[in-house]
Image 1: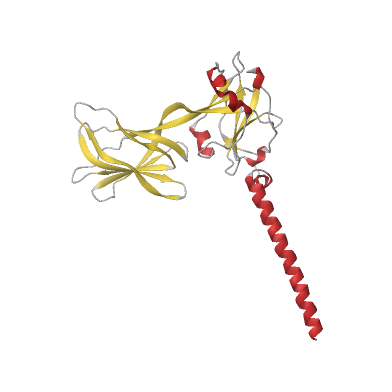
Image 2: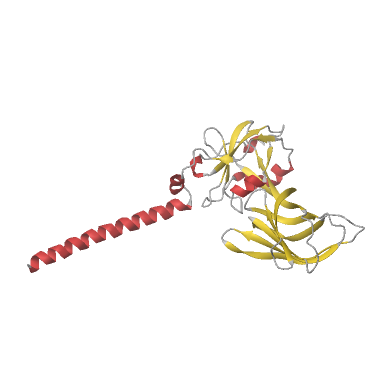
Length: 279
């Protein structure tokens, strides 16, 4: 991958809210793979356009994203509410939020049951909405976990409502969610880097490496080791005004306010001058 192994433009890393330190160990072909986690996904935009891989000089290194790399089952924390009328509600908190998932797996202790359910998703800035409905059903001879499939949704939490009728509530289940996750491929040399995350108004990156995506993704990739996702200690909200689309908006409003101020001063001077002439 030597033909593509060169740094890109430098960026202001202070505009990104979170980061993860990464140690790259490329393969003999010069390629490294970084497996993005649910924590990474939760700090990024839904389209993952606000990810940057930078070196110690704040130069960004080009990368490719494999959007269908992996699907990972992770446990969900569950809070039970039995106060609903003839129903039991379960709030299912995700391991990070907001993050995309497309399956729910429930493991009940009860050997036999057959009850209606509704599954709701809570999303940022919108009312919760129903994403699945049907019956939770298990025969006595097949005590396997149940799976609920739904269209992939970026959510902050789920709410499961199980109708009990006049039966006793089911024992609270163990719950897992299935999360589609991405892999990041880069041709950066071996060494330590920072993965910058979290800049809602960032422009999607444009790298020449995308023109050689088939060659890159067909090559053998080396592993990467990394630390936890942490808040960027150098984060500065004001730095976002100097980069990305937000900078143009800021300049527009500054210019507009300045023009309004000048116009107000000129109007005031004119009014005072007319008042003096009348006196």
